[in-house]
Amino acid sequence: MKLLGGAWTPNIVWRLSGDPRRFSELRDDIPRISAKVLSARLRALEETGVVTRSVISTSPPSVEYALTELGRELVPVIQAILNVGTKLAHRRAAATR
Amino acid sequence: MKLLGGAWTPNIVWRLSGDPRRFSELRDDIPRISAKVLSARLRALEETGVVTRSVISTSPPSVEYALTELGRELVPVIQAILNVGTKLAHRRAAATR
Image 1 (cartoon, rainbow over the protein chains, first blue to last red):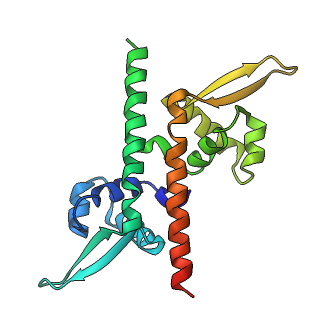
Image 2: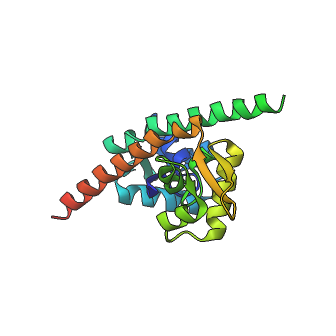
Image 3: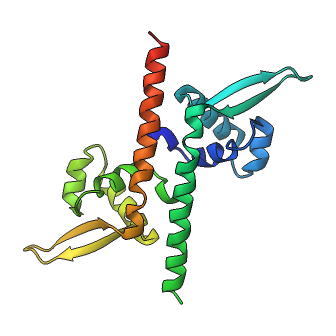
């Protein structure tokens, strides 16, 4: 159950659903996340096998994160959560009209 | 994204996927959750429309919680998270053999 646990974890997996992203790109994608929390979440995602971390031989070297094949299976799950959330929000808005 | 946010929220939705449950039953189902956290999570789930709360005219009266129709759409989502988690755990176990 903890796979998507921890604030921002779904957001990070969602941002990686396109191409691999660098740490700085992920910070730009999710402005309200601190570097410390982003590092911790990425480390946890790496440990569980949802994300891979690769060092890119740029100058200076940079680090890129990507979803693993199994990690990619979480993308439709997050989409489903977003869909239910949107329907609930519409229902609440309709109830207050 | 916050719909299933907060520790224990997925566990509570999962426990309600069968029949409606009383507060005390949910505490038995999830022994490590405190009454305070369970109350807070149920209130949040009620506010977002995932759960309904009904007072049952037992003596003394009791309170029952149930998934709404939209709340029920989260059950296959949680099942999908559990499936990916299990596959990842097997992969990690295989990697350490």
